[in-house]
Image (tube, rainbow, N blue to C red):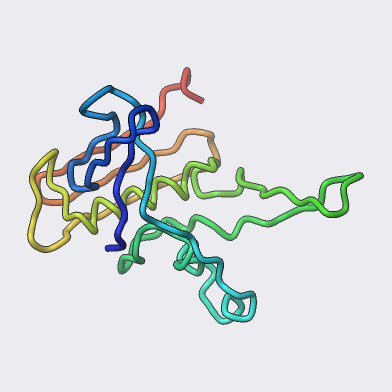
Length: 160
């Protein structure tokens, strides 16, 4: 794994990723990723890579896991009328209809990389399987499964 950690935005306390924290243990502040500098790949390099999120591996804080994808990424860029230099991503074309798909896959990759079983417990070998499904309806389901892990979610109508 890359040399990354979590730093508190309020007090500056650094927490290792392996702590699986999302709030600072000292002050309760929100933790931000630190120790990682994204490198943008050259366009010539991108052209020969598969059309997945992982084609931008140098710009991601987690190494590419084997077989972990739900088809996220590669949504089209469309021009903004009246602003020829601007373009926007059409993320409602993601598998679940949400821009959050990219982040969910990165978190699942991090869990796999850390070989997380449950908070504070790890396997020696990463063994996490992620499955995502989407249909024509706005409802979608995700699941992360592995030894000691069984998490799944289907959003309620109030969350849509």
